[in-house]
Image (cartoon, rainbow, N blue to C red; front, side):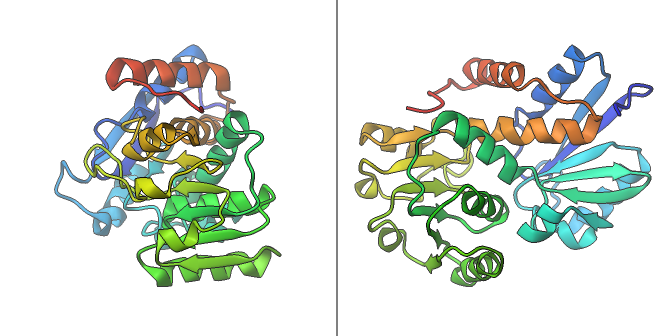
Length: 294
């Protein structure tokens, strides 16, 4: 049930998030549905804070009667042990990107996997999932890995600079899914014979420019899916498209996870077409928009 009797307070906790479009997406959708909602950015970079300050931030949100918080880099995994309850998906993934505050209890959810799958099916419905490669085994990567397996991937390869982290995620996946999951420290080795590439690290963000994958490795018929959405056209997406690969920008996941989070926060379903249209308009107005899929 929607909380229409009071103004809803929502926040985003993360580092370097001043250019996030989440506040505009949530506030506009709430306005269109007759809800009073304020979305506050809680930027660790601006306050010289870190993930170590999460207990204080969560306590403040509970005290100030927030309806919930979105959680992003670098806090998606650090927040897990601080919560009162985890949804099945959040517990499975070991990462939380949405905290719902209900009756004073902090309930961890994860809408990243659902949001990624929502966008992927819409933009690349015929993509070959025989052997996708996932670069990044952190919070977003973990959520996507579970979604890829559930979507029918025949096998999955996981690449991370921290090979132990990749191996931990692979072991968890193998326990519940009858799908071969391999780990690699080198992306070139992982992409040998692969059908698709999913990038799930912060590399490519405005404050962390560059690409985690050398251009020479990007060749059709490989499809390339990005998680970063600021800028919407990352170096990886631009290069992959120039090389002739089918691409999916990070905007689809941003919208998908927001649709799910909006419902958790407000009790009302977001209009997906309207929310994505608004998001794309914001992208064009702020930093230029590349195509959703090509």
